[in-house]
Every structure is written in structure tokens, then in C-alpha cells.
Length: 277
Length: 290
Image (cartoon, rainbow over all chains, first blue to last red; front, side, top):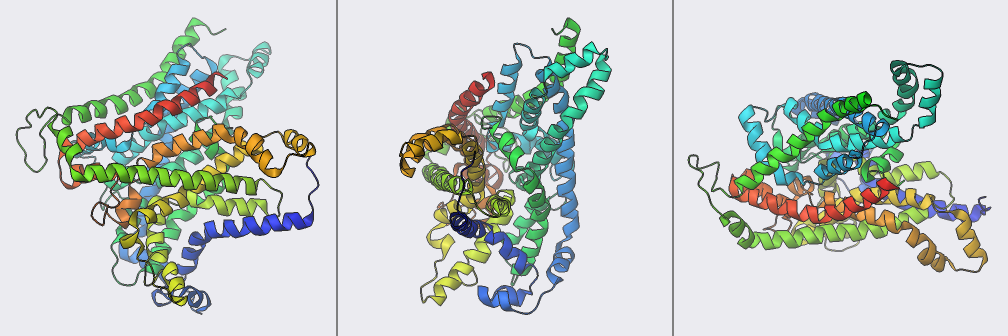
């Protein structure tokens, strides 16, 4: 039973947490504001920016015109969706069988898969780079999709495994008692119960792939560069560019911010491998 | 209960994942170790003679190696302190009753979803820039000399940026852990007259200990590989002031094309990460049995 808390105490809590939360969020809010300003307004003092009258969509158009934004955006979509779907296709059978037909090796396999995630990417940078160079995969969406699939495969298997594990075995027995065949059991009993887990796994993995910035920066150039690498091209300033940088940034992070808000809980499960519940 | 048939079907279902991961792990790993013993530079094609331990020797005795190790430790240590202490603070705060919990929590967690190159560039330009940045503006309006962040305190600036991105992660996990704490236990302690600080030190903190360890271990794995934030802000400079181990290996392999030395550095990074990984794996493994 929760204790009754006075409205005054609640208001104080709200004020403190609200202020700190606002400070954390402020950089994102700030680029959102700047993205609708002209370049001249965007470099004014903060208060002047806020009260400057001009609001414009020019920066968004300029980003597209200057650097073909949608090419990089679609690279990001293809790479993150592609690696997620490919990863799910490989991981679902594996997680399924480990959760429902466990053997004495299951734990070892899971732990070993996890250990591959502990390998620092920079430790295998040279060989991957050379393999990609020799097979023509450098700066290709295919190559990047493969790398990101393999990189996130352990997380996908683990998340799915923890979700599948939660499906009660009694339900399967009940279905079997009622005369369901194996195929019916999988199709009508297990699958509907497993879909929410698969959806959250997919969501988290898209976020991770979208924001991955080691391999995307090192393995792509102009052609296959997703948004992480595209934004990096703004690191060499050329004149006034705050509004354009803001517009490009907002477009790059907006889809993921929205997905992220829906996946807070799954984030904990996915990134701690079930160690914190 | 599982039959022989279902067991072999199960093996068949696991094998694609296992085979692919095995290849992903073994092939590059063997290549890295092999290259690390060769004199192999992409700029001088031709023979790649055996170099013995030379690459390791050159990598470790290079003056930037020392800097890179210290910078890596400072980066990981600094960010861990900020995110764990800040995360505990945020978690305690967000766990209290308030209005608009959902909105406030979203605002705190949002930075985690911002891609590294965006957060680095936004902080670099809109906040740290001594002329047009917000911090510079505030300093000037107060009559102070604005700080040129990446020239004067480059490593601290990067610690700040990366901490902003990882503080939400620590908060989220510690908050999840805190919410699993038995409220009755806290109330009982309060009725027995335990002060807030006593309740924090003797009930909440011990309850959070496991989550804190997980946060530290997982973040360490990721923070050892901080790369994009350095690449787009300082390029490892000024000098080697912000070069960490990951960045140093990137420089020797992809900028100086020294495959041998880059690989030796890679082996070094793998060993370093494994020391942390062993502890993390042990904790996760224990949880799997429970």
C-alpha cells in the first residue's frame, strides 16, 4: 500500500525532477528550435534566438539539396531493418529450441554467444576491413548489413530466449492434451504468445543498428553511408551551418527517439542480458 | 520429455546461429593475431615477412601508447563515476511520487537514443564553441572569458559528452532495480525510526548493488570502444590529448595503413576487454541458473 503523499511534497519533487529532466533534454530541444531558424538567427545569443521572429523550413530543404539526405536516410533504413530481420530469422529458431528443448549445453551456448559480444570491434577492425576490401564489400549496404547482423545476433538470441522462457510450459501440455499436433501447437499456441517478445526485440535492435557508429564510420564512404556517417561530414565546418546541422540531426534522431520511448523496458532487458529485471 | 527426434531438430535450429557467430569470432580473431606478427603495411605491398614480437614492442614503446592507456582509463573511469553517481541520484528522484512522471522520465532517457555523431557535433558546436556556443555566450554575458573547451580541457569535454549519453542508461537500469525493492521493508524501517540516510545506506544501496555492478561492467565494455565522439570532435588531439586505445588502433591501421601494428594493438584491446568481460559473464551466468 503506497503512502499518502502531500500535494506540496509532490510538487517539490516535480519541480526538482522536472528541472533536471529539462536540462538533460535541453540539447535535443535546442537543435529542434535551431532547425527552424535561419543560419543568421541560429548563431545569435540564446535568448535572441528564442525571440527572433523568423521560423523557416529552409534548413531542411537545404540539407536535402546540399547532400542528398534521403539517400543516407534510406541507407540507414535498409541497413538497420535488413540486419534486424536477418538477425531475427537466424535467432528465432535458435532461441526457440534453447527455450523449449533445452539440453545440458544450452547454458554454455548462451554464455559463449554472449562472449562474442564482448569482443571489442577495434580488435577485428583490420581483418574485417581487409576482407571487405578484397571482396568488394567496402562502402556497400550488403557488407554493413552483414556486419551489423552478426554484431547484434547475440543480443537478439538472448532477448528472444528470455521472452520464450516466460511462456508457461503448462499451456503446451494443455494443448497437447486437447489433441493439438506439433504444428498446431507452434502455430496457434506458441506463436501468438511469442509475438510481443519478438516485436520488442525487433524494436531494440533497430535502435541499436540505427545508432551504430564504429563500423558505419569505418566501412562506408559516400555511397553506402548511413546517417551516422553522413552527420559526421558536418564535423568540418564551412561557414554558417548551425541551422542545417540541427535540421539534419533532428531528421536523423527523430524516428529513433519515438521508437525509443516505446522500448524503455525492453532496453533494460536487452542490454543487461537479463541480469537486471 | 523431449524425444530424440525433437532434440536433433533443436540442434538443427541452433546451428545457423552458432556457425555464423563462430565464423564471425574465429576468422577475424585468428587473422588479427596472425597479422600482429607480420611486418605488413598496405602502403608497401609485396612481401610480409615474419616480425616476431616487433609490432607489440613498437606499439607499446610508442609514446602515444602511454597517453592512450591513460586517456582510456580516465575516459572510462570519469564517465563511470558521473553516470553511476548521477544515475543513482536520478533513479531515487524519479522513484518518488510526482506529477507528470511519464514526461519527465522520457526527457531524462532521451539522450540515450541520440546517435553518437549527432550528440558529439551538437555539443561541440552549439554548446562548447567559444564564440557561438551557449556556454561561451553565458560566460561572455557574465563578463567572463569563455572557455575554448576542446583546446583547454579536451578530455573532460569528451567525458562530458559521453556521460550525457550514458547517464540515461544508468538511470533506467537503476530505476528498474529500485522499483523491485519491497516497499514494506522501507516502511517498516521508517516506522522503527530509521533516518532517510540510514534507509539509503542500509536498505536501498545494498539492494542496488547488483544493478550497479551490471551498469559498471556493461558500460565499461562499451566505453572502452568510444570512437565516433572522438573522431568528429577532436580527431584524438590536440596532440594525443584525447586519443584512447580504440582511436590509436584506428590511426595506425586505417590512417597509417600499418596492418601489423594495428593488429598488435587490436590484440591488446581484446585482452583488456576480456578482463572486464570475465567478471560480467560470471554475474550473468549466475543469474541464468536462478
